[in-house]
Length: 257
Image (cartoon, rainbow, N blue to C red; front, side):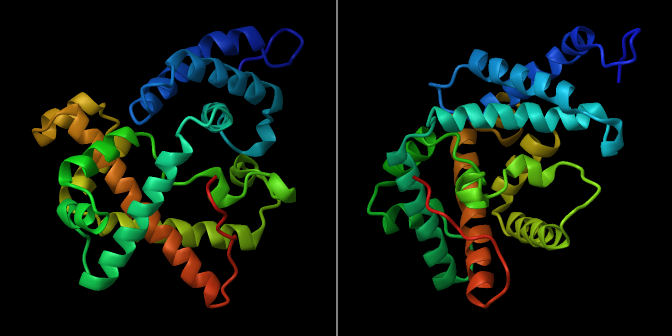
């Protein structure tokens, strides 16, 4: 953390130092957002998040400033996207249909369904199904509505995940359950989709680079990403619903509207 002569964080120097971080986060996020989203809007919202991080940061939080800033920057970008309803409601409805079809076919066959099976289940041709996946580029693993976003008195997503001296043991347990469910769902992805997710999220390759590794086009990588996210959402959210039905504490699953 950089301080000025008065012993307080040097705001201007921190903004200059971490502005490239904001841009890097924005461009990485753009890879899985629809074409109507402008990177300049992401950067603008991210800079607001950076300023908020500078204003709020305290060494006593026990986290490096960059780690804290990344949370705030990414959160501010996602807040801006959500406010602008960046994924049309019609596409969200279609993606929920895909998630339901994935769940039904997995229960029926005991394995991850293939694209052709999903297309047939949805009454679409394979071409129509793949076009829908491309149009729904930007479908997220978790929406704020899934976790509670401060509405109805609920706690904001970022506030639950910031370092705190008084962590809620129940919240920690629920988050741990969700992580375990996610890891299990990733392991059950088809090999190509699992590799694509690892290249994107672990290796931080862009879509073109992933396409070169897989021997497919950038558009095909987008389709694979959207489909993988639908599989993960179906698995994780279904597991949460089952746990809740069995009486295990859990956050209510809200509708995406």
